[in-house]
Image 1: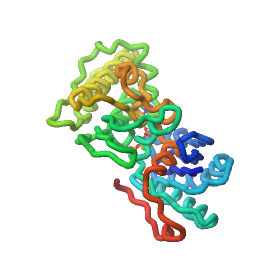
Image 2: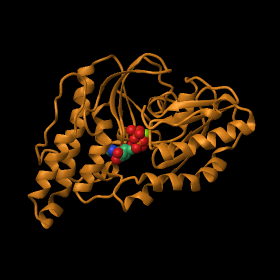
Image 3: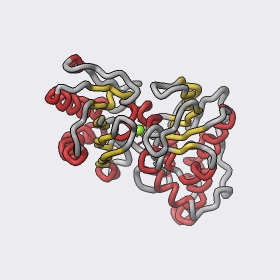
Image 4: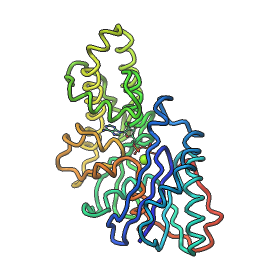
Length: 310
Ligand SMILES: Nc1ncnc2c1ncn2[C@@H]1O[C@H](COP(=O)(O)OP(=O)(O)OP(=O)(O)O)[C@@H](O)[C@H]1O
Ligand SMILES: [Mg+2]
């Protein structure tokens, strides 16, 4: 059994998986409601809430004795990461267990390695989340090579900022996804950035939405909100799908919070998609990555640090 712990942003999560990737428990306490009134995650507030939630979440997830503990050590909000890393160190040290520091992005990719999906590399992976948008060449389960990344906003960030411009709640991806179903995706012709190579750019799209919304009166915005959401979502999904097509490759996979988007999932019927409940942050994916990362033996990890960057 591997215990996974995840606190890099605004989810406090712990999960147990078996050595062959079966999920035994998977507990996620989202702080989204807490941050909603600020329209985004407030780092200091997130750290404090992680402190409140860490022990109850661990108690619920620890339904059996782990043999190793995997924890997100990078990248993320530094104060938030430190709560998970400290909890992991304390638990591992008290039980004389090895500790496995995990890169959160490797964790998102490893959501594909859990059963029943149990995806085998090689594949080309789109990682689209709140903080990252990357194309990855995955040759084995221990890592990946970055083929392309966003030059400005991440796809999830584009959803969140777009939702805010439309007066929808936080986090915005799910709200836009739901509202877009009632709108016409061809109502507005939003730009799709085509930057050289395999990189992404979403800041122009966000600005285009801003200018469009500015021109509308409050009642016009109300009347066109679903059309705006549908057209905006269409532009993000097109940009992601086009890049995947350019990258080519025999097999395609999609992970990260934006992989939960219904239009993106429908646009990629052949792709391996992270299961819906494993798209946004969770600790099962961190434990899964822990199967393929290097464990640090007891007690060497006591000096292990968290890092804000990958
Ligand atoms: N159905 C959906 N459609 C589009 N976007 C979605 C959907 N559900 C969630 N998202 C987006 O996913 C993002 C959250 O994903 P995730 O939890 O993987 O990101 P993060 O952990 O904050 O960032 P990172 O993994 O880059 O550190 C948010 O930006 C949210 O709006
Ligand atoms: Mg994430």
